[in-house]
Image 1 (spheres, rainbow, N blue to C red):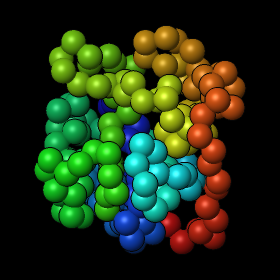
Image 2 (image 1 turned 90 degrees about the vertical axis):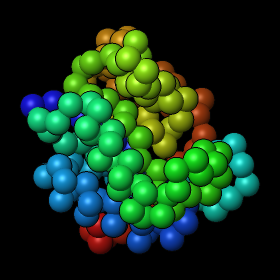
Image 3 (image 1 turned 135 degrees about the vertical axis):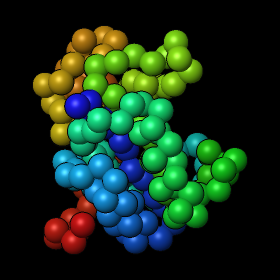
Length: 164
């Protein structure tokens, strides 16, 4: 079984869209480990703030099948193919990790390069997998967060009191 990490984000009807995404992910992949939900400002464009979190699960599916399943969930929740990647969105699911594999030579951004660039990806990942090594650098996600976290955009934790 492969351990997979997926980031979940929304800035349009964000609570509903995040809850629906988590339900869909659980139906397809089973038990999900979830980070806290964080709120962050829109990055690279003017828009409402995002809710972001990371989920981790295990699967027998290969990386292509996992990617296809998460893209199908996005599409079912109103994410159009070709929708502007730098604008507001109902749902954004990004495959961050697939075990300790590096799929760059196969045309996949896995492990996702944005892990190092955005607190809304790195912090929830470090919350869930603090001791896990990054597949390329070998550095733990907790150590990456300690090194880079203070230089990234600010986050605030969202208290949904267990509603998701």
